[in-house]
Image 1 (cartoon, rainbow, N blue to C red):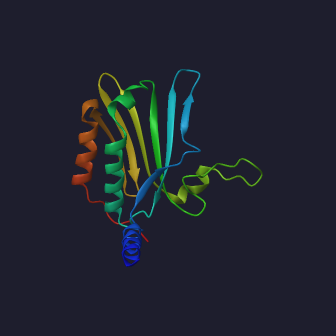
Image 2: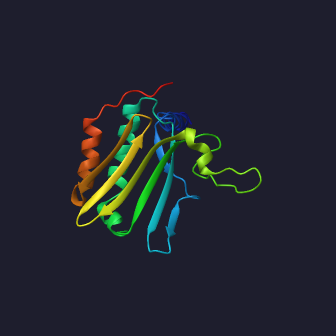
Image 3: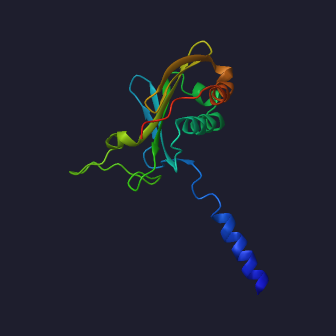
Length: 170
């Protein structure tokens, strides 16, 4: 019996060890693809960040590492006439991974939560072998860069290692 209690205590301790660890979670109900009449394709992906770091540098690093591991050049090449847009929001009671837009009289659209948005990143293919990346994090980092398509992963690694943005105002 003592052994069972010790095992349960360890299990409880391990499960509670990192309750405030930041986590990026895709919002499954509003992300999607739109195919326009002219053949242009828009991929819209929305994410919430549970327990986002208050420090802009740590938030920046979290988002860079997430993009490095989740978006690859071959994904962007699938949509040569289009773009992939990613928006990142602080998780709140109303804005969770299960969030759904509501178009009724008392509407609730993702655009209503602009104050919770912490980052936007748009990827667009540029022939012959480049990617245009427009991105902002917080109110301080707003950049457009064109990089060779083969260096997308290296780009995010370099960004994570080289930048120290100022802290967001409280």
